[in-house]
Every structure is written in structure tokens, then in C-alpha cells.
Amino acid sequence: MKRNSFLLLIFFILMPLATGLAQSPVTVLDSLVIDIWPDYDKASVLVLLTGTLPGDTRFPASVTLPLPETAQLNAVARIDISDATMKDDIFFSTNPSGTLTFITPDLRFRVEYYLPYKVNNNQRSFDYIWLADVAVNQFQLKVQQPIASGSLKTEPATGNISKGGDGFDYHIFSPRTVPSGQPFSLHVDYNMTTSQLSVERLPPSNTGIQAPGLSATPTAGTGINWPMVAIVTGGLIIVVALVLQIVSRRSSSSIREPFYAELEKRSSVKFCHNCGVLVKEPDKYCSECGTALQ
Figure (cartoon, rainbow, N blue to C red):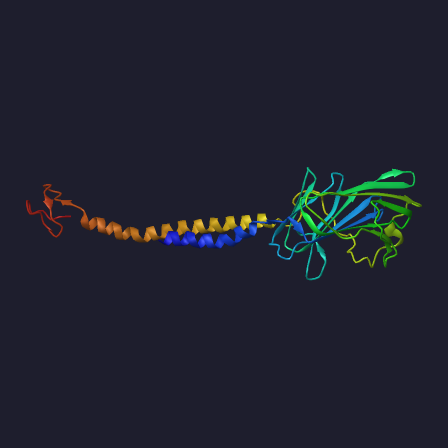
């Protein structure tokens, strides 16, 4: 009875851990803003994905996004709701098939990576394709024109080019809903009057976007692996419980042993050591030969 109660206690201790281990896969993003900054701080294309999960998301949440084969990861982070800062303490992994999966305890997240572009004298061009297994309720894409670029064209055309408070021209696509499995393709062509990067001439300060600054190694296992922490914790609890149970059994056994030993002595059959006749327990002398019993 005590053993069953003990195991039941362990079950209730481990249940919350088991619940925490089950990450909820995200199938819908409430919003996703993709900022594309060519020739910003490197001679490549910086892509910033800032997303928001639905308000009823169960945490920790598992998010899987497309990651181009040629991408160089710069950051995978959650955005802390308390101070709106990026924190790269979450677990993530990449898949050779072209996906990035991360586990987050927050509604908002940021993914950053660099893509290469084609160079033809002063001309630059690149393609960007969004194709994911998650639907996006509000999808918006913005292309920042490099400060050293004389002209930039997108296909499809945005129809909305506006100057930001930082002095950059932004080619902005209207927000739209993008279902799961539906691609959104973009082709960008622009020329560069000089090779100077945008950040060298006009660092953005009022873009409304936290500038890239975190770095991430594009390998699996960056950050704290909370599922593994929970597994190890649960395993330690089980080991400690088993050790305590074994110690408890041994202690109980050592306490009961003298009692049973005395009981066996009292119930054992005795014989006269001189003549071998069966004697009764209370007798002090053998009824056959009169020898004092030991």
C-alpha cells in the first residue's frame, strides 16, 4: 500500500514535466513582417523575420519556418514582452531540407539571416521566396533601398515607395493573408553607385525595428535546451525516489528481523541432547532421562 502511494506521488510530480515537454506545433502565425535590407552591413542581403504567434498559443511553442539553403544565420531569438528586447536563449535546429525549427516561450520572435546576390558590374539582383507549412494571417514584406543605390525595382512592383524617418527609401507591399503552402516570390534589381554599405553612411535609428546585433551559430542546439533540462530533472527525481525506496525497505527489514527471529525461536521443536527424546517448551529437565535441558 505504501509502495503504491509512493509511486502515485512520483506520477503526480512528473506529470507537469511531461506536459511541459510537449511543445505545441504552431500552424498559424498571427503576423509576419519580412524586412529585406540589401547591402546594409555586408555585401549581401540581410533578411529579418519578425513574427507574432496567435494569442491562444500554448507554450512552449514549436515554430518551423523556411530557411534558404544558401542562408547564413545571424540570429534566432524571442522578443521579451516585458522590455521588447531580443533574447537568443531559445533552442533551435536547422534541417538540410530547408527549414528552421525553434522553441519559444514568448508570443513574438525574430529570425535573421544573410543571402547572397548576383553581381554584374554595378548591378545587383536576387530572388526571395516565402513558402512555409504555416499560414500567416497578416503577411507584409518591405525592401530597404541601399543608401548607395540610384534605383531599385521589384517584381512584382510594390506600388508604395516611402521614405522612412531614417532617410531610407522603403518599397512596401500591402499586408495580405498567405495560406500554408502558398508561395510568395520576389525579384529585386538595383544598381550601386559606390560599394559603400548603408550602415556606414546612415545607421538606422528610427526604423521601428531593432537593428541586428545578436549573433547565432547556424548549428543545432544553440541556447538552453529546456526539453532536455526537463528530461534530466525528471530522471533525477525518479533515481532519487528509487534510492529512497530501497533505503526504506532495508531499514524496515532490519527492524523486523529480530522480531521474526525471536518468533522462530519460540516456535522451534526441541530435543534432549542426551537421549534425543522430544521435549516440551516449558520443561527444564528431560522427562525420560532427567538431564537438564540446554
